[in-house]
Length: 208
Image (cartoon, one colour):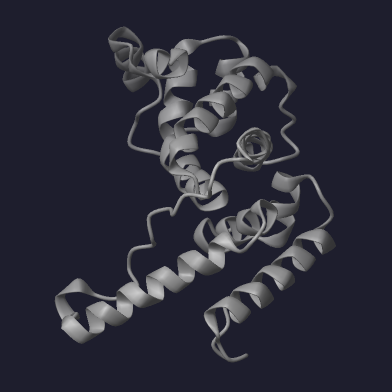
């Protein structure tokens, strides 16, 4: 796609490394200013910076791996076109994830006749060096139950889970991403946890 071609252009990569890739973390506000000024090296750096996080978020929210790259590219295209509208009273990350959230909802509405795909399961539930045959069976069973539980949630509920538990966002940050009141975020979290508890068959203490 056009977005991938822009991100992988050799000359642009060299410029980005020279300008933005220093020993310290890139200044995201400066990058957005650069994108607003249509500087491709700033966009390329921002794209590479957000690609892993957006991929993780979109996989978890949509549960449809085949859609992730398309949604991510649509998101970054909006960032390119709308960077001049960014207001610094919000963090760059919440602004970009808000765009990704809305693009994901649009994609899901377009694809609502497609069966929900089983997304890759989360790593780290058990140390592979310590997993015997019995533990491996239990781990696979737990993974399958977690997938079943996540698939039972709405896209909005999955977004709350992903943003809170895997990206470490506060309820206020999530509210900015989803463009809704903080109380709405808390309500979605409550129902998501209750539904997952029911599907997983967990006790009150075991529920996430």
